[in-house]
Image (cartoon, rainbow, N blue to C red; front, side, top):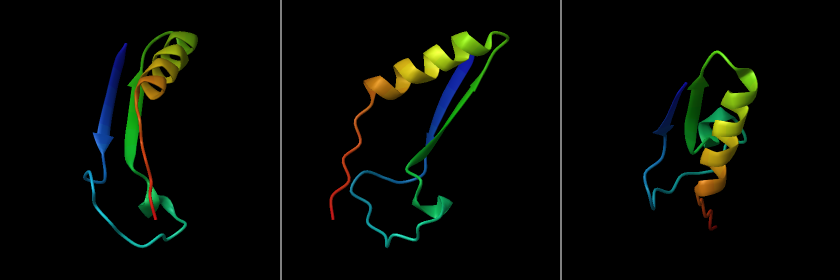
Length: 55
């Protein structure tokens, strides 16, 4: 099982809201042979993160 996260925005970075995929904060990629294990790993990863978006 392999899980990676690639941030697409730096902390404190500002940009207009485009309402497209250009608004994504980052990309989580997970691969493995057991789909439920992959889902659990992604769920755990996301639960451990904190993103705060302020206007």
